[in-house]
Length: 284
Image (cartoon, rainbow, N blue to C red):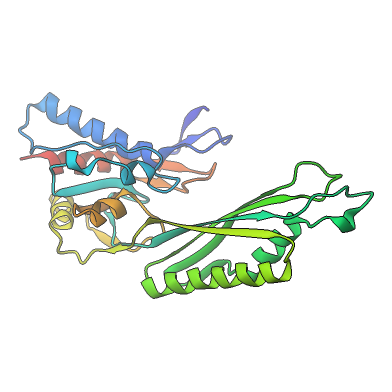
């Protein structure tokens, strides 16, 4: 992948994502630490925590040994948009996996002896909600896999999806809806076997603006002449995990946009602001 500078932005060459989410945050933290060291400025004691596989369900944060963390406040550099954007709320995330077993048969000679797992999966998906459900709730079927050759009725299929909401009752309602759809589909295809699994990847949080971590960030922004905004997000971050584990945390922007697409970019001036804010947070 080639990285380019284009009209004050950092982009990829368009063949892949940039990975600025969240390399931008890591770069800003390193720059702030280096600047503090070069200037010989006293800084507050900190713990720097880098986690793996955040994008696939906050895996690194969920498996982090929290006994190693002595800090009670945290700032998570993983939001989109400018550093002045604080993520005020984030949803609960529930992942879904449905494994379907039908019965294979020769597609040209005796298809009537088969039970198509892909057909069952298609019927099941069509009964599930999709897209935006309400202001803080979404549902998505992201993966459908099945079959191996075109001349055989597919015996196996796999569905993977997710739903998110900031409302606990809505999470439970959607969980119940998925169970009902699976049970209804199983009754219609008695010669198949459908297995459903849920996994709670992370839970919702909300910030009032008076938490010590949030106040600390707001003060740093104001010192640099930046006006903060508190905006809810439909995405998750390690902040969901840290807050649920008792570490008061603020999630801030890193100057990156269009994450997870080949159109991803980082605004250079905003990335510099991220480093400046980080340095201000580190100053004693």
